[in-house]
Image (cartoon, rainbow, N blue to C red; front, side, top):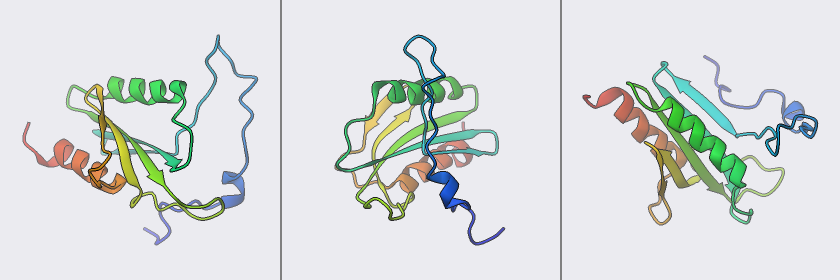
Length: 136
């Protein structure tokens, strides 16, 4: 494993915008999430980051995270959606692990993390513990 695992390798490509306007089904168009990780076929994590000054997450993106996590969670599998907040200025790297979690989608409901001082990594670690370390 290399030391740059988890880093974007082609930053110029990551900065390219994709025009989804030609992909429309009713009022549904593609959305994006900032990160997805699958761990051992048992835990699925969906990550979305917002700047602290950003508008609230669009309703469609929120529904997308809800439906993906809810459909993957159950029958011995776990899924968590985590919304992280950061203060990094444009052009500066965001520390995905240390960003504070503001909301977590778990077991069919959104849980507010405001005031709890949990990082995104703390939330993933807790989901990992439930999925792999706690008895069923």
